[in-house]
Image: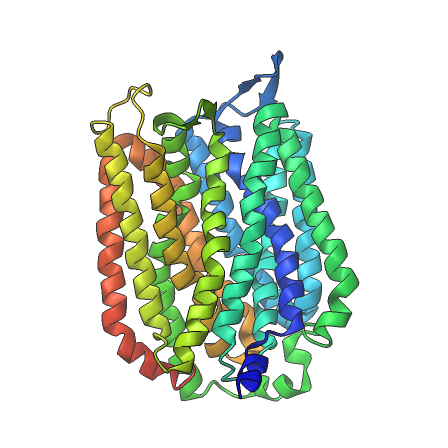
Length: 451
């Protein structure tokens, strides 16, 4: 009996290929993102050669935050277009390749470091690449499972843990070369990472994915007839669940994405980055979240399976509500960092302990594991099959709105102070998390057994 259970809990082989491909895509994205706002807001002398520069655009912090927020929001908004084109014309498998090529060229364009125009072109290419890649890979993972397969949430958590391995190493490698030898080298390494991921994906897709994702969904015979009929009441109810949770998740990501803006800038100025006399590069702090993902991801993946076996697995909305509360707790620790410094004092010589930011990222990671992979899994369960990639794109628009707001928070922090921003986020997100838990029974009913 134990052998039967173990066999059922094994994951499809295609999960590992898609996870490995996403490792390199996330490596390229987070490697670049780790120092992007530093690149925009600075023009830094190379510490190894004072006559040369690491590069940088010397933009005002508010302007840098606006560009950062606009770019990252487009990376999550364009999957709406990419998901539609994938479902209707290209197919999910080809869309991953198209997205990867755009991403690779975008990084190499940024590495040219010519002028502001080439910088914007590089960001546009990256955003379009994300538009094709982001909805296609996870929706193919959903296709690996049959309806009702209890491995689905666990599979998405494994996927999430594995591709965050790339997000962990990215700031360490790209950030190191970018901050030590020149930002262009960080961009270049990110481009080569995406190239490697594409080569492996294209070589192994037929073997590990079979027919999954080969053709546009609406051209498959099983979906062609469904294209002609209206949505059923059950399908509409499930779509409403996606919409309601999308609303709440948007605020979660608004707080979470402060990692790339206000938290990075606060760390750069006001956190004591010295460890036994060594100064940790600011960009390396972006690796704390993914290393916690790697350490805790398997724990959560196993937890959901174990709880499902004893019929104690929390519903999707409850998991998401708990994730929001965990994020709020993280910001409470950032309030502690501000208080240690004596409030919002401008003197950068007064530093807060490193432990505050580490614990903040720990709770943010717990929140992320309760919410993000579960959300991806939920969309593949609730979205009508013929619109799978489109609804995955719609789901990502929550991050689009959140990333734009995260850039705007840079100027808010400058005006209102870090204390007000961190405390305000903590209170607001905690309240929303409680509301989601209160609504959970109604939302589960609207899922019609697809939780």
